[in-house]
Image 1: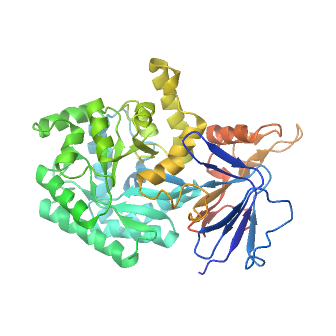
Image 2 (image 1 turned 90 degrees about the horizontal axis):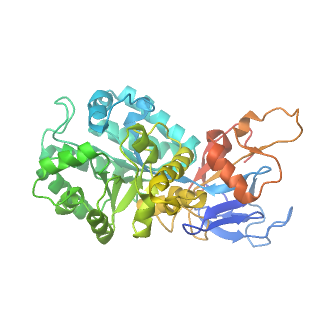
Image 3 (image 1 turned 90 degrees about the vertical axis):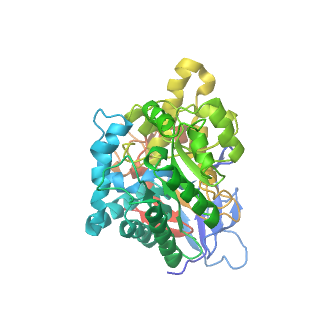
Length: 458
């Protein structure tokens, strides 16, 4: 379906820098037929539209009272195949959890009907939470991985889709047969995405060694060669759990560190996304910074599995690029708004030991969920903010207005209640701390409406 020129009228809010939350109460954003921002006005008068030629008959979309436009969230780390296990992790630590919950679930994706039900559900849910871009882990199965790519494209979500590679320390019923088969099957998924989206406008293949312990030296090296030969991004895990780090030391005795394992294999580059990074040493952080690899901070997961507290302030101060990831199903929710909240809370727990400078502000956490994530997935300048030339990946947020004492609750607006005297900064804080998916009225990806709630007028 062709897009039409559209004027989005109402307050818009986005992060210009890590500490600068730009709030425009009287905004107007023009989005052209290509889904790109054509012009931005910061002083749109009520009822008056711009007189620019060619926009006289543009479609108009307005926010509701106390509503605003905000960039779409960017989930830099999510296991789509693990969605049914969200909230299910018992008392396991990471390695036990993989064997008890994860591998049995992922292995079931050889059943494409089951895979379709789950993948459709997780993509729908992430969109309903305002997530316009997601970096997905699939499974080892080529057909199921290709199916995930198809579903993301059909639903209009921007996605990085990776077939998981693992040829050791996993059940015999669920792993790659060899290095050669891991590379061959990864290439098959790359070829499929090239076929359905040749320019990677929405869907991009991403090379995905599960994590160092699950891959032999030969497989890591082969995937490193594929990473460099194709120029495609790579995603994996690093330093999530102390037991895991000990395992890496025993499996790679000649490597200086976990990060060095990836560097030796050619997998530590500006296009690499490293999830967790909870227990990085100063030397590892320096190496990652030198290679310009990126970090996906997954606070909900790290708390749930008791992996630890990532020192995000230290990473930011040292110049590392950081975004947020839900890490479903280690993380209990696919909501990036919740993840934003969890990032703040984890930073406050760090601050209890290391001082208030470790705290993340609301503005900083929202930056990580948008512009920070855009940098992590290599799409800075295209998404994550509202400047001319950027693509309209956005959500319309609705907050609940409270009137008289007897007024019925507006269930559509979730738990966020605005009493009328709050500043815009306070409204945003209420959204972050008390909001949920009910506040997300509509979601657009590259100018196309991909999700809306009952009552949306667009």
